[in-house]
Amino acid sequence: MSASDSRPSIAIIGGGPSGLCLGVLLHKHGIPFTLYELRDKPDNSALLTPSSMLDLHQESGLAAIRACGLWEDFQKHILDCSEELVVMNKHARVTHRDNGGPGPQSRPEIACNTLTHLLLASIPTERINWECKLLSASRTSTNRISLDFGPKGIFEHDFVVGADGAWSKIRNLITTVQPYYGGMQYLTLDILNATTRYPALSTLVGSGSCFILGSKKGVVSHRGVQDSIRLYVGVSTEDETPFCEPSAVLEAGSLKKDLIDSSDLFGTWGEQVKDLISTAVDETPATANATQLSEPKPLYMLPIGHAWEAQPGVAIIGDAAHLMMPWAGEGVNLALWDSLDLANTIIQSWDKAENAAEFQHIMTPLVLEFDKKMFERSKRAAEETWQNSKMLFSDDGAQAMADMMAAFQQMAA
Image 1 (cartoon, rainbow, N blue to C red):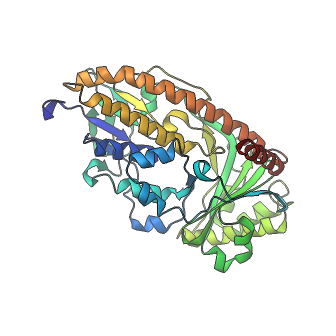
Image 2: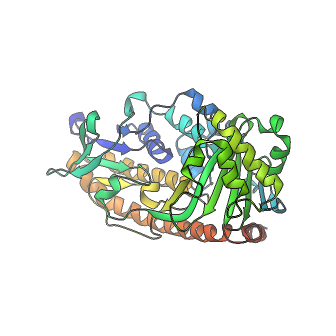
Image 3: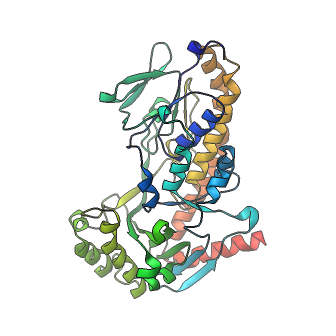
């Protein structure tokens, strides 16, 4: 790139794993950008707050971590949740147990909050604008992208990356496709210091991930910071109507009655499982420093295999591009893979262009190639996770998952 005042202006919308990873990679190569994020800037206390656990894969998530130069720091933060996997039926009978794959098959777990902290630490603070809610995005007469943040202002950029999640505003510049309900909703619950305070429950779920499945429902858990158990209570439903009454969510006793007494939910499940749910309902408000529990959250997905024609000055990555159900562990891995590939595309183009218009011209066919590769891998993953969703949340999901894991182990042998 020649004169500094002719450099293209790059924006990243969204400060999740994909947006932050892209920011780290661009910064490492001296390419300026502005990242806009809806949330407040997280402080260090977030590291002690339970969050979702992410298992990163060698060819995608871990490759991106290495490219960011964060491998050594990453290794320090994968002890909270082991790679152990326990599968059991609704009566707590174990159908499968393993300790994860060796060597290249290893998929270490890291807390989402911790991964966010690692990535943020590698981006200069002046590159990120916090508390910026994108209201709309449009193309100007000069082919720039205009971003409307309401009271925060309107800003124009030459190249915009939409890493803004399921309900992406940047996606609207490329396609009219929107997410739809995936047939599953879940409650998120937490238990802190589980080993010392609830040793029986700690033993039940193990040191890693646990899937308790049956009757088209599931209680899925991961271990995390502060010796926590993060619990997802999931139910298959025909529509997005909450599976427990919204009023019940305001009071733990009512919620427990809804969940544990109803034969339509978990009333016929084993006593150990009901004790796990009941304890988590009691513990969660204190864990979250809140006065009430949250409502069930529906899961959404984009059509499997959906695609679009690349448009000048814009690209989308992560959930904005390929939102899918979470039952293959591929979502964050695909997102980080997208970031790695798109960063390489931008780096490849940066020094070839003399000005913003030329950069956009060079990038458009390269984004087309980037999209094609992303479409191929995300379609495969979306098909897998959709099949897994139907299998895990079938009438006997525990046995179905055990059979699947046994087949995987046989293939790997």
